[in-house]
Amino acid sequence: RKEVEQDPGPFNVPEGATVAFNCTYSNSASQSFFWYRQDCRKEPKLLMSVYSSGNEDGRFTAQLNRASQYISLLIRDSKLSDSATYLCVVNTVNQGGKLIFGQGTELSVKP
Amino acid sequence: NAGVTQTPKFQVLKTGQSMTLQCAQDMNHEYMSWYRQDPGMGLRLIHYSVGAGITDQGEVPNGYNVSRSTTEDFPLRLLSAAPSQTSVYFCASSPAPPSGLALQETQYFGPGTRLLVL
Image 1 (cartoon, chains in turn red, blue):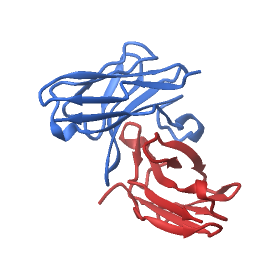
Image 2 (cartoon, one colour):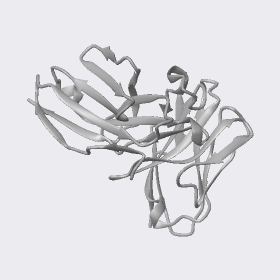
Image 3 (cartoon, one colour):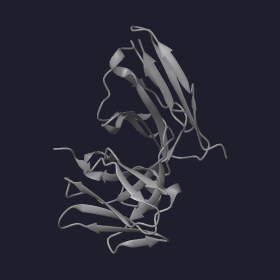
């Protein structure tokens, strides 16, 4: 089983739609959780950190469920510019300090 | 600040050749790492460093060497290139190693090096 798993998609949605991505992780000792965004042939960039209480940044909402070991990202009112691959990232402090990346979920927003 | 820079952007090697991928950051970050990204595999950690003079292996270290003589530079050496090393390589840095402090763990990535081994 992969340490961090995501549905690779692609998710094809119309502009204005709400879309949700889920990510599961296997290491119950993980302490930090992130969503990164990667545009085609570009480097990943931090979208948002995920906090225990959940957090929101404009149209983006991230949730963490420690009991079930999953993280979610909700995008409301999708824009064409949201088209990208979204990477779920989890740290593994008890394994010498490493970040484990999921394989990414591809989102395509259509007009 | 230039952030994280990587050279070269593209490289074609023949099997058995060696080369060094350069990575530099000007943010005085302690933690630096190298990843490779392959289709369907996500980013996989090759080697990482928690500070000058300290390096450690990641998930896929075989065939690669690193050194960290300064805070700024973290070169990745391919000892004898193989077709399986065809990939996109990203260098990243962050203020601190993964420690549970999210702000300190934010990774800043370089633009990547696309490597083809024939």
